[in-house]
Image (cartoon, rainbow, N blue to C red; front, side, top):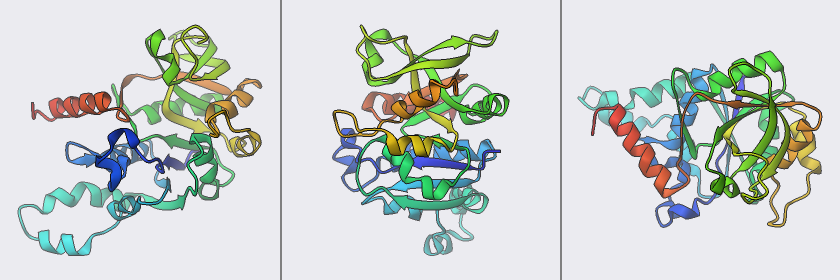
Length: 276
C-alpha cells in the first residue's frame, strides 16, 4: 500500500527568472492556486496523505502555504471572503507534511535520495509539480496505483512526444504487455537522447511509483557529465531485472517548467472554470 508521496521542490526555476528570484517555482500560481497544491491534491485523490517535500534555500513559503495562518483566518472570519481559504484548510487538515532540505542541486536522482529519511523502506510515489497533469476521468497518480497494485514494481508515467523533442526527456524502450496498448515492460531507458539515438518517442514525465530498493541503487549511481545523479540511470538498473513498468496515462500533461507550457496550463484551467 502506497502511503507517501515525495515532491522534489529544491530547484532554482531559472527559466522563470526574475519571477522565481524570491518565489519558488513550485509556488507559481495557475490562476489562484500554486502548482505544488495541484500536485498535493492529485496525491490526496489517490488516497496518499503523507506528503514529503524536498526543499532548498529560499523555499520557506512552501511550508507556510501548507500551514495554518491564524492572522489571515482571523481577518477573514465571518466575512464574504472566508470561503477562499476553505480549500487549502481542507488539505492541511487531511494531509501530513514533512520536509527535508537538499543541500546541493545534484539532479532529480539526488533529490529523491535526499527524501529517503522521510520515506523509509516503503514503496512511494513521486510527483514533479512542474508537470501539471489533468486526468481524463481520474488523476494520473490514481491510475498508476492500479498498475502498481497489479505488477508490484516501479511504475513510470509516459507520453508520446515529437521525435525532435526527445533530447528534453528520459526516453524508454519496452514491450507492450496489455491489449489496451498503454502498458510496457521497460527494457531500456536513455536520458535526453538526440533524435537519432532515441529508442522510441515515449517520454518519461513527472510521475513515478518507486520501490524502496531505488535508494540503494541511487547511492551507487555515478554522476553524469554535468555532475548530476539521474533517476533514469537508477531506473535502468531496475529495468534490467524486468522491474519497471511504463504506463501511457489517460489525460493531458502541461510542462509548467517552460513559459509556453505554463501559459497553456493557465488557459486550460481558465476554460475549465469558465473564465475565458
